Image (cartoon, rainbow, N blue to C red):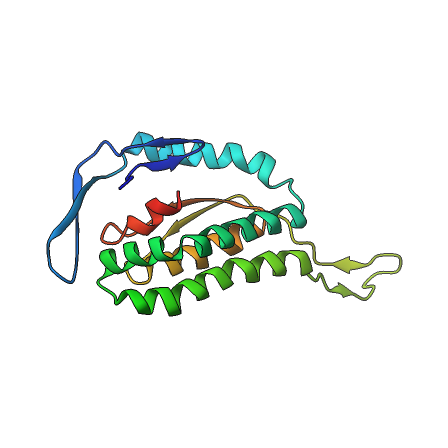
Length: 185
């Protein structure tokens, strides 16, 4: 099982205190996972800031295509994601495979479509010769912390809209259920 974090374009193992990741069904230790150091967290923020410079300039069409690739990759490895989510959360594998995975894939596909269909209302003229409108632009780095329940779904709910909008994300999964987030990296 790969347990490294994706920081920018490289994978790194955590360097701090190990956190026990338990199988909630049996209480057995699945693995001991080292936490990220403050330096690694800073590096992740720096990498997200650097990536934002180019990612924020991508078109909705380009972002949509990437979101669809993520959805396709999750769908292709649905059984692997379901097995890991079941192990990490103690859920019945069939519930993950038949209920959660399709909803997660749909979340990425929804935002892939939504980003190509953003509406910006235009208001009437408030002053002669001036028109007001809403413009939707990327705003920067999103720091996201997910809770322990539904880790893969929570990740989708946080990542898909942020990256669809042209933002970058530093994502921190729950220390109790980090395994599917590591698989996504």
